[in-house]
Length: 406
Image 1 (tube, rainbow, N blue to C red):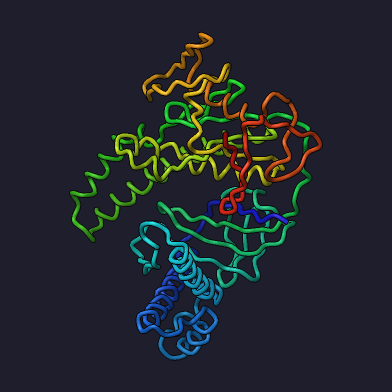
Image 2 (cartoon, rainbow, N blue to C red):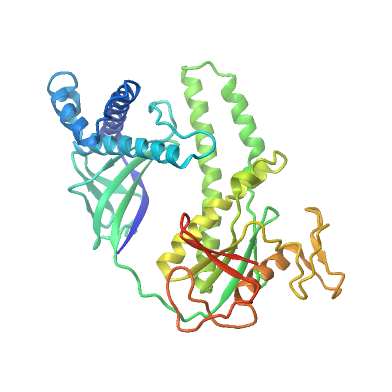
C-alpha cells in the first residue's frame, strides 16, 4: 500500500470560512498550550508529558476555562498535540545525532504567519465535487473528480495561503504493478542555466521564476514597508505580496512536476549527482540562483515518483568530477572553470557541451559497456548491468539509496 495526498482548492462562503478559522485558532491554541507545558517540564528537568496525557488534561480544561473549543471538532486539537509531540521528538533526535547548527527547538505558532492549517481525521467522505468534514460539513471543491472516492481516507489537512483555502486528503492506495517495458538508463546533470540536461540529449530550461518576478517583488516589498503596521492598507499590501510569492512558487512547482513526470515515464533507471545543496548555498554569488532552481525539490519528486512507478534512482558520489572528465576517453581537465560552457578534450579532440558531457559520465559510471539494467535501488528487473571494475556501490543507510564511487 502507498500513501498519497491529493491537494485541491476549496470554494467556501463566509460562514464556512468562519468555521475554518475557528478550527485553525483551536489547533493553534492547543499546540501553543502543549508546547508551554512541555517547555515548563523540560526547564524543570521533569518528565515531559506526551500527547495522551496532555489530551486528558485538555478535556478537563474545556469544561471550565476554554468552553469555546466545543464549537470545533475534537480531532483538530488532538492532531495539534500529536504534532507538538513529533516536534519534540525531532528536536531530541537531532541532538543525539549531533547535527551541526540549530537543533530546531519547537516554536510557538502565531496567527500572523501567512500559512495556517489544521488536520482532521475520522468521519471524512469525498464526493465528485465536494468533501464532507466533521463539524464543518460539506465544502465545495474547485476541481471535480480529482480526489479518488474509492480509497481509504486517513486524514484531511485544511490550509490557508494567500487568501485561498486548500484541502489535502491523505489516502491509502494499492501499489501499482512495476513495469519493465522501457529498458532505458539516463544520466541527469542539474544546473542553473539549464535546469536538467539528460544523457539522451534532452534539455529542460530553467523557468527562473524568482528572477523574472524580482522587480515586482521588490516594488511590493517597498510598498508594504511604507504602510503603517496594523492598518487596513498594510493588510492589503501584505496580501498582494503573499499572492505574488504564491504565484512564483506555483511556476517553479509546475515546471518541476512536468519535468520529473516526463523523466520517470520515459526511463527505467535515473542516475543523479548526490548534491549537497546546503553547501552550495554558501556561495553568496550563486545562492539566489540556486534556490530559484529548486534542486532538492527536483530530487525529492524523482525519488517518490520512481517509487510509485517501479523505477530505480541511483546517486553518484558528490565529489565525482562529472563535468571535468571526458565522456569519450576519460581524460580529466582539472583546470575547467564554471565559466567554461564547452568541454574540450586534449586527448581525443572532442568538443561537447559541459552539461551534456556530465550527464553522459553519470550514465556511463552506472552502465559501463553493457545495455541492461542493474537490480539496484527500489524495484527489481530481469536483466542486469555489469558495472565497470573501477566503480564501487555503497549503500547509504541514512538516505536509503545506492552511491556509486570510482
